[in-house]
Structure formats: structure tokens, C-alpha cells
Length: 439
Image (cartoon, rainbow, N blue to C red):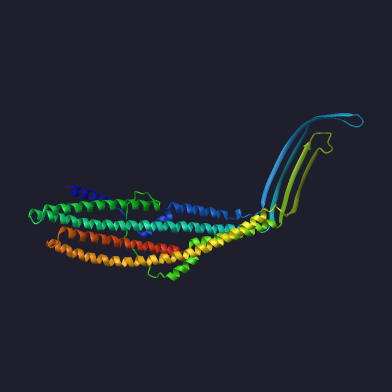
């Protein structure tokens, strides 16, 4: 029959998908994501760039040392007449010149610009670490959400399989009763329709589950075809308090910390711009060697060699640069004001978000308790309805409704469990305490 074909396809899909699958725990999924996720890899690479920029080689704290050398050869002929009218001529006069030198330069004082630039390198490194942390937190939240979605769908598949088995038994009983004239063909057809609907729903859930598993494999940075099963056990934190979470959020939330670093960078830039108004003192030293060799007999000196050190200080002061430094300083003050305003906005929004997330979490826990009681009620109702159906005291429509109600109760309960867990994770992320999650 048609429903037999659907069942066969469905059971084959379930059988093949569950064969030799790894059991992927949520802790293992998180560890794999931390090692393999593409976005986290990029964040770590960007952090390495920031660490490179903060190296002493990029801070301007070391002197500059350079070397140069040159050589030249000049071949010329000359003819001259002196004041007594005597003429002289020199053909193919060759002059060779050689020179080499080493120069050392170091900025002794630059108006504290180097100091504040180095402070900004440190702050930029700290900001890059916060950027990486933010990416990791968001990625882990995606991993948790996708993992629990897969667990939810797995539970729904299992519940649907149980419902399908009940529908199959009902159909077989209807066939037997029809043979004895206890039910009509309409009861048999209704049972077959319910099997078809349950089988189709099971296929849909299986397809959704496979899609979500592929999504999770992508987040874990591994081949999408890897098969696995998830765990359905969900643990909740028992010691969460709103006052503590709000305190954590105002001290450790990554968005807030990024705002503080951006403000510090702005203040350093303002101090750096003031350095343009101060004098600059540079130290320079060099060692030079030169040699000149010529066969021009008209020259008084045919061969000359020079060596020696040269050391000195140079002081420069940009007294007026057309007003550009003034404008830069004014704009820096505005940037600081904007950063302070943004920081206050972040604090206000963060306080609101923690209160909202806490309320959502408490509501999710309450709904979870209600749905648990609802499952218990529907289980008792279905058990009694099934007994009466077997005794012929109720019709198939009433039995089917009890069956559907039980399935919906289980589905709603599973969704409530995972919704509550996601609410908890979002609350922990806001408070900057994603590390409270078991890894």
C-alpha cells in the first residue's frame, strides 16, 4: 500500500542516518568550533597582526641605521691658456672617485608623539583581543543554538516515530475488526490517512534535521557530510541572579569594553596631536670614507683620501603650520565627546538588555514548567483514551485527537526546553560570562 512505501523509505532514511554515527556532545561541538571555525581562524589571524604591530620593531623606539656607497669614473680632455699666453693640453685625464658611509639617527624628543603612539598600539592590541572575543562569543552562541535545534528536531523525530507506530497498530486493528464486521471501511481509510500524514510529517522532520546538522558541521569547520547524533540532555544554571549578572555586564560585557578602549584610543590621539606644537630634537651621527684618484697633471692634488666621524643634534619647531594642528586638536576633542556619549548609550542599552533578557529567561522557565505539566496531563489522557478505544467506547476521531494532542504537548515541551536554554545563553553573553558555560 501507499503508506507501506512511505514507511519503508522513512525507516531506510532513519536506519542509514543512524548507522555508525558519532555521538556529538555540546561540549565537544564547542571545542571543535574553537579549533576549526573559519570565522574564529580569521579573528585569530587578525589578532596576530595586532600583536605584530605592537612589537618593538614597530614602535619607533630603536634608532635608524643606514649605509651608502658610490663610485664614479670621469674621462675628460682639456686645453687651457694662461695669462702669459702659454697653452697646455691634457688628453684622457681620468678621475676616479669612491665613497662609503654609515649614518645613525635617533629621535630624542618628538613632543611625546612616540609615547602616545605606543600607548595606542597597546590599546589597539587590547581592542583586537576584544574583537576576537566578540567573534568567538557570537560563533559559540550560533553553535549552541544550532546544536540545540538539532537536538530539538531529533526529539521531535523520535516522538513522531512513536506516534507513527501507534497509527500503524491502529490501522492493523482496524483491518482485523473490518474482517469481523466490527468497523466499517471508513474507519480503515481514516486510519490509513492518519498513517500517511504521520509518515509525511516524519519525512519533513528528518529533512529538517539533516539540514540543521549540515549547518552545524559548517559552523564546526568540518565536512558537511559527517553524520552524528546529538544529546538531548539540557542542564540549566541554578545560581543565576539578576543583580550579579547586571554587575558583570557593566564590567565585563565585550561591547562595553570595546567602547572603553575606543575612548582611550581617542584620548591618546588628542594628546598625540598636541605633540605637533612642541619642538623635536634629533641626534645624528655618521662615519664617511672617500677616495679620489686622478692622472690629471693640471691638478695640484692627484690623490686624496678622507675619513672621519660626524656627530650632531638638530632641533626643529613647527611654530605655525597654517592652522592644521588646531583643527586636528578640535576634531580630536569632538571624537572623545562622541566616544563618551556612545559609551553612556552602551551602558543604558546594556542595562535594558539584561533586564529584558532576565525577564525572557524567567518567562521561558515558567513556560517550561507549564509544558511539563501539560505533557503529563496529555499522557494520562492518551492512555485512558487508548484503553477506551480498544474497548470500542470511543470512535477513531476522538482517539486521533488525543494522539495529536500528546504529540503537540511533547513538541511544545521540547521547544520550551531549548528556548529556555538559548535564553540563558543570551543572558550569559550579555553579562560577559560565556565562560560560565561548561566547555
